Image 1 (cartoon, rainbow, N blue to C red):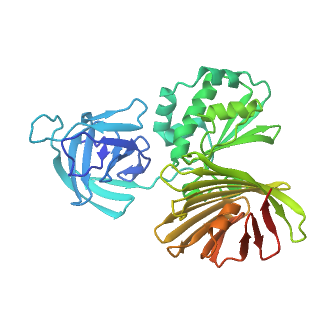
Image 2 (image 1 turned 30 degrees about the vertical axis):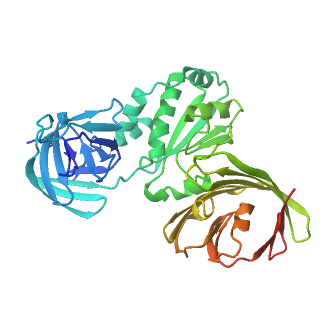
Image 3 (image 1 turned 90 degrees about the vertical axis):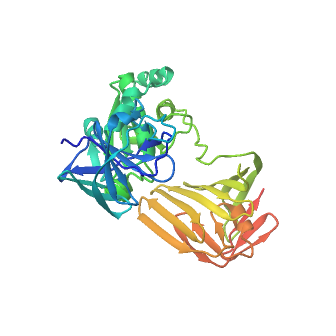
Length: 433
């Protein structure tokens, strides 16, 4: 019997239909990688995986490690293949339409991302996606991630944005750095490619570069191009970068952001956090130990919709700039932070997140590669970012100091706060105007 699909479900399925969302995995049938296989994961708990290749389905119960069969016709797919909804399982009411699956075998799960099974004499392996690294063509991208092609085919870009792309008269190279394991890349890159295709402008030259698993390859390219997140689109004219798009759009779509860069009207990014009302804002003057001004910091504190505050800070010293986003709960306990440090040598971006008594930090940068840190922290610790207000909030607490250039350390405070002035042990100060 020809195996056409593999679907991971729980036998706890109820009479209600279930929705699954696309999530890329690598599927091997009898030892051969099948790029046409699509994997999905259930939108609701319990977490359930699906790999769909045709019109026959295998159901995997992770708890019992049993495999059953069903028909692909029981699933209704979105036109862009990014989601699917099952028919209901048989219920006591007798109103459901999905046929009960038939037993087909057993499987093992060596870890949370790997499934091994033998069904009707055929071996099946599902594991983490090994995304390609380095230069690739659009055709190679579609072969690696067929769902991306479906997204592009179904997408209808804004005609006004396409016209702006069509009006570009200067030869321009769009260097698109992406990862096929990345949800933001899947969301935005196919749509950008469709927009460029519709513009049909010979002055826009597309170059694709893939980033491998764990953001580790090709490291020389990642470092030399200062890639901190994917997708990144570098807009180049005569080999000089005139602007770049990073991860998520500033004004709706990636193609609109690229059009803004091409026409010299790039918009500032509002950040990824949900912002409430502005609580306060201002400017600090930064001074060296001899009290000479050597930079400025502009800041805004927003109300966090679920309680607490969100701090945005931009520090400028000469040719360097450091941007911080940090969120805190109503007790000023840290939740997350992102620090982006830009210099003439490149960009370093560090993200911090707290889960109970653990603080996770990941830095990506032009010179340091990737640095990951996991640190046990006390209940009342303070996360101090380059934003001056976080130093004031940390008074009397054990503090993890997130440096401008990457991951930091947990230590006692070596600064003092006097009204609107923060003074550090080395004699430098920050004072509001």
